Image 1 (cartoon, rainbow, N blue to C red):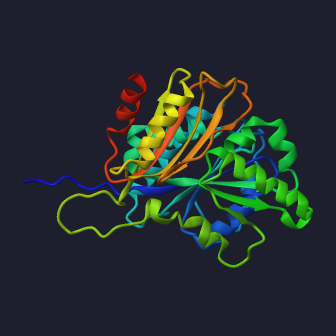
Image 2 (cartoon, one colour; image 1 turned 180 degrees about the horizontal axis):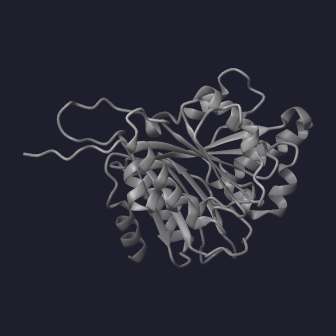
Image 3 (cartoon, rainbow, N blue to C red; image 1 turned 120 degrees about the vertical axis):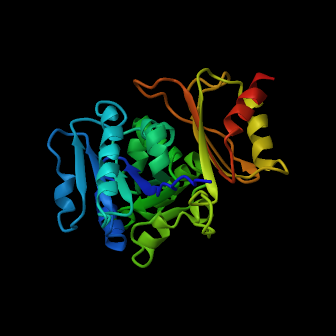
Length: 320
């Protein structure tokens, strides 16, 4: 019996956050903790600047400028990741062991996640670990009220880092924290002012992606958790979707540990952010409608074990 070769999947971490919220500063700290990394930087302007701020790190660094990964340069991410992977495979001494993708400050996360999770060739070779989003305590009240992209960056986050807390009043910080609790109620908030252990805390995605021991024989996944994404082409009845999601999260056989998404419902005028953890679905939070959005709902589930049929289970339940 011939055993197929296990493909080593490279971890990918997405760093998001609105303009001026401190993404590159945080990336510098993360690279200090994990220097054996590659970086893809997406800058909205035609003249890239952020890579100059990372010049001290001797790392594989690629820049996508002149537009956002969610729109103008959306098609560039997949071939870039393919090229990085082929370069990785060609070298006996691996040039990096993970990839950070820093999005532009006005990028919406959904198309980036679609590429990482749904491009089959990439999904077999890259392991999307999660999204870290920076939030400015000084400016978040303004940009969250004006720019729906900023709300989407928070709604899709797996880790939230509040920056510039030393420049904001205590009441201002509290108001931003309350807003984050509305947009992402299942996500803990860290502060960039935390000197000791911040990078380690951000890079530890906990039980969602913990490595497991593998026996020598046979091919097994690299970790005990998997993810699946579901796209909803039409608005759905929230009452029905709520019942389906609550059953999935709380059922006795459920292995789901994390749910996040942005959906369109029959009862609401605009998109709604949805979050859930094992045993609990949080109330949906309204988000303003963005320009050039395709109005398709997207849900991402993370679960222990095999969840290949989960998307079909959800769709069948919604049809009943």
